[in-house]
Image 1 (cartoon, rainbow, N blue to C red):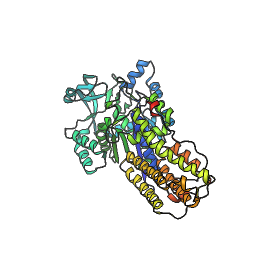
Image 2: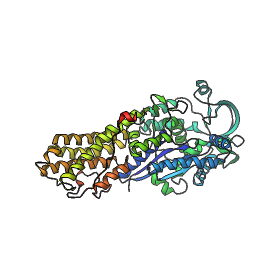
Image 3: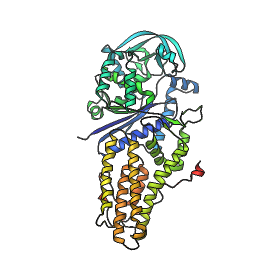
Image 4: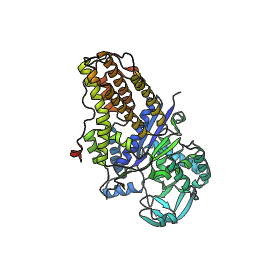
Length: 507
């Protein structure tokens, strides 16, 4: 039986178009899925849109359209950009879909019948912006927007009942919440008494939501509804075999939705007697020159800005930058200068230059055919063994989500191939010794092929350009074998994969 890997992004709320934050999370999920496919695992990659709630209802009323029309418009924007940047999600779920609504109602019914949901009156503070009831202390701290006093009857989920059980699970499973600073944050939050969770909104205030199956006067709270997508997509309560094939999942989220995913969601699953997620990984935020991105500050990286970068370097290079320099463990700074510096250094100078060097020498001196590999010296043996070490390291780092370190190590290996060529000077030796120089070029190309194979999940179209020119008949199961190059195989001409940018013109 194959190992399985089920990875999810959050559902993106349809009150705004995609931006650099949602892009980063989804690209990270796509690349993790791709690496696991390289390991020939049974992979399922889910993303989608969250489409209920107060903000959607208000936005649709403001624009004079139905809530469903509003959702259709914004959901399609996410689908379009994922296709545009060549992401390979297995599913795209919308919370307005019937398949999702059925599972939400099934869970609500089950929990209500088990006595896990009760009706009560609430009087206190409510954040309209966050669609969330808050405590007096949270109100005084002033971290929530559009807060008002409210008094109404609602349904509540007995979340507090599972506080001790959740703390125990987090403490006993070190990898459940990652990275460690987020885990500590959740444990700190759980030191205070946990309140029960309000899971409904009266229709008199909000009509755009999934109706409670046991009370037609209420709709489901948007977060209780949205979180269930992770199991509704894989047919929970519909097809047990299919559900068990993939669950439990790895959830990728931003740090701003830590509590909903690490407190609300696990307690909901506990109440349903469903196994908890394998890992919830919460990354940081993209900042702009040390400041949080916002439209009011004019430093927001929106869809048009992102497409501008695509137009300059292509989506593959942009994905490379985001993953190598992104906020995996802490906030990360985005700047135009930093982006093009990384592009020039890693992709144009190191990788692109290496490709050009090797191909030009083979075209000019070996009739465009891969030279014969003769006896290896210590230098070639080192390149070969380091390629094997690199491959092991990449898949080891994958287990800890260290995509940034994976790319660091691959580029470091690419630099070592360049250094090897500098020492061997094949552009000189080829004039006097075709045979030994052929071994040098074969070794450099074999090493480059392994590096590009390991870069494939990050830059699939660019690496496919390389493999097509290499014309080696590579398959995923053989591409990482150093000695897999076919001697005498004719390689085609290659255009510059990553043309260098003039920093003075760019800036």
